[in-house]
Image (cartoon, rainbow over all chains, first blue to last red; front, side, top):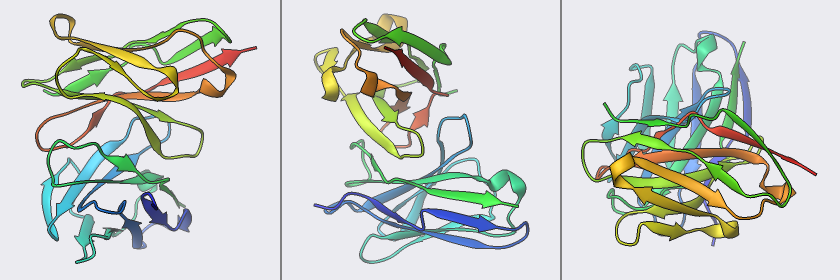
Length: 113
Length: 112
């Protein structure tokens, strides 16, 4: 049973560019959440998708957007990249949107130059 | 406001010694509480969780945690630390909407 997978593992972009990160949830999971973890910090909630809709959003600007597909996989898009967007982006999956355990992927390390 | 505080940024223990990592939370409703571990450059692995019931919960790798409502605490313990336990540990709280709020983490170093 595959766990949560994310691609790519590492990415280097320059300021102003756009980036798309991808996540496939654990088998049987239908809810995907995205977190940003800056160096030396705990993960910060970006948003959560369920039934192809954004259900919750953290304190992140509109430059951060996402999508969930019918197969429950998800994308995180960041436009107009800033140096401060450099971080580890973590995807977590769970079941039924409720208070179920979230399982995390290995993350995508984004470096913005 | 909802928040999690991990007062210890860095802890060093000797291999075989006992460990306690502190976590205090602020949450208006009944919280769901978690401990995750992160090895360098890796994602987060769930160690244990508390949803309800027995306030002493057992997790993987010999870890346990105790929920104390009166102290708003959920401290993580292990009776005998192994060198492989060196990692960063995050406490997190969530409500019914499953949005995790994390502490800033405690980095554990293990001396031989």
